Image (cartoon, rainbow, N blue to C red; front, side, top):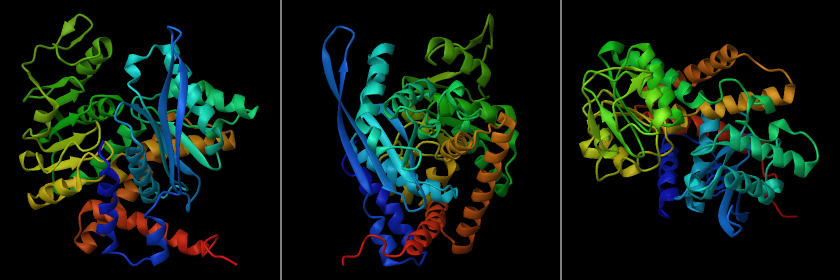
Length: 427
């Protein structure tokens, strides 16, 4: 990840500022993160050796409430990347009208190279180093790339041990037995689905005739592909980090999902038990998936997947950003010039943080909701804010991305101005 990622992210803010009037104080505040923490994490490996890993936590802005954001484990994690992700989270929370600011965390590590015990030691040791930086009224971590409820459970347990009390609202995305919320594991994909279902009718599309390609068949991509398949869309391609498969007539997503879960890769025929679906398909790369002639493209992997180098090759009509920052600013301009509709990450993948908010609320109240209640509340949130951002885009004749930032900026700017000078003055 290059040092330009944060500059890339900031360009979206600059574009939105041309379409909204907010105070200079608010603009200045949003140029920089509130606080950044870099820590060294010592871990005793299974062979007895000691390794030290680099970890980060950035709280970007807390004007609207305690900061909120996931923790990712990936070899490419840098402070610049975490800062950019915290920036996006700030606007994502505001766009969905959640009472949070934005934060993010990460460790520079390939978790697939660690044993389960090493992974647990790493996760608990990370919390040792950042425990004073987080908390239910300050900063609430959650899962992100290559972290899950099990890892959040280890972190929550370590936080409780350090503070000598049970604090379920300190970390979200936990196992249900530790106060996690039903529906959290599918929330990002579910939110993306609700946004797609809200927006596609505006283009007079028919589900059965609408082709879809999903890049990233992980926790989020699997849910999106499955929900779209169930709704009648023709999902023709999916991919993971090893490559992908494409079938012009459509894939049988439940079978692909079952095979992926049992073998951990997509590069083979896909079967359900002993019954195989004999469909012709091609093996493709992640790069080839991005340029398929489909109606809907869903990038659900990592940042900077569509750049100025490959943007002109993209043939999808609609792109829904289920990943954070999958399209660079330069690529955005090319896609817009080519008539491709891009629906931005700070709206499309906001289902995860929304249900994390629901979990935080449930933890603090002690009352827990059914999965139907969670999904219904999520749908209401996603549909309401998607419709509002669509209205702004139409009224101002701007892209959905710029409209989403305008919508979020309006809320953030109002909160900053309401607090006045606060601690910015000197006596």
